[in-house]
Image (cartoon, rainbow, N blue to C red; front, top):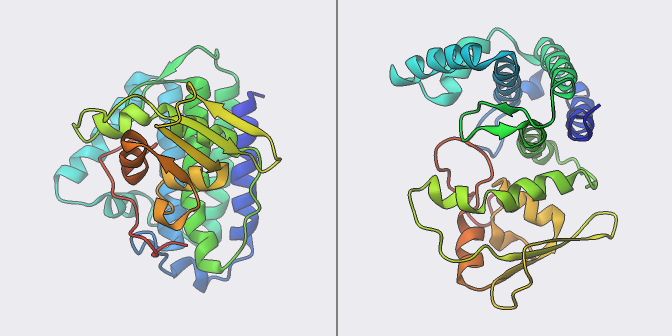
Length: 263
């Protein structure tokens, strides 16, 4: 299986174990992510995996699905309302089973594709490896709100390497998505992995860098934590601006959570 698909599957399996232990009432509890309930979050993940499967099926199925979703959004539905319109009949344990089965099938389909194939998405097209990592990233990031809600601790693993990678690669996207010029050269990033390994990206520059834990960096680029609530060492104006806005996921510009809200 494609290594990125192995990590995606493991990420989803770990979240599945947490979800399987929830009570029926827990699924309707609001999280600190925009007040979305657990049902909303898992419906969103399921919707993303269905979109991914449509992209794997071809440009036409993906375009049709996107057009139908856009028509409802243009008609006044918010993103979460549109997802509830399509998937609101799936909740709790029924939703859990459907989401997990779709994710597993998607991992198999992605692994069967040529690694250099390009796939359509809401943002720029992506190669199969990065496309698969994007699904892992979404699963990990949205899952955090559920871990926070339940007061559960999630032990970090070196699967974070994929999420940190997509975080670094989307430096330019963070600003292009906001129709802003990049504030300067891409910073040097040096992170400590959960295993103790050191991960590095870009040329060392003492006046433009981000140093710290891979976990906290991943939390910032996925907007599950504000950089002010981490121990990341951010040096230089380009790095500072990036960490204040970082967005490694597709879609319209989103604002990171305020300091202190999600920690």
